Length: 269
Ligand SMILES: [Zn+2]
Ligand SMILES: [Zn+2]
Image 1 (spheres, rainbow, N blue to C red):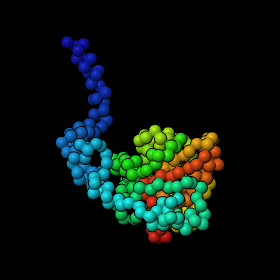
Image 2: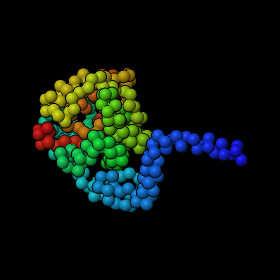
Image 3: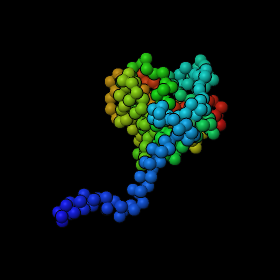
Image 4: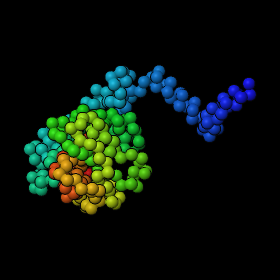
């Protein structure tokens, strides 16, 4: 049956082409899928807890979730740990945002900081999904209604090398979790210049580093905004972005971040 043979050959042609180009890729994919079925991936941070899938998708195991820690006695405006009711900076110069909600403290070499770095710099996306979930579960913003959830943008150059904007991943998770959390609006803010990576800079340099680095792409006409970022260190980025959003007509801006540096780490940075 020459007709049937040629039809089958036609159907298999894309697969044969794929195997010619990538001889090892398909067998590797099949092995990956089989391995995932036989040995479900564990907690994305420690690899343990094989019952993770049964408990519903990408999340940290209880031990890792606990290891991130909690923020206690935080500044009511910028969430600086241990600075209740107001930190020195906020008392001296009130920030343009209403308040910051942060999920856990950011300490160098603590599991939370290591997890964020592994997500951002090593591209561990399942870990990013678990951290996004952690942000949603730990943040108490539900009583307040926001119109827009706006991520702090990455400069396009850095976006191209990293392949994703961690703040946008978090903001998308927040906007999806609850309609009162607001609509995901990644195009509202844009970064106009590449800033030096904040982690390399000292306290004063950071403030100057982010000045004039952001613009609002549209008028905000009295919208309530939830600004989202991964880490808040000095608060310079949150201050500048909030100021830009308010100048564009936003009614008010609150901020939610995964992690907040305590003052001791801030002085060291
Ligand atoms: Zn774990
Ligand atoms: Zn403060």
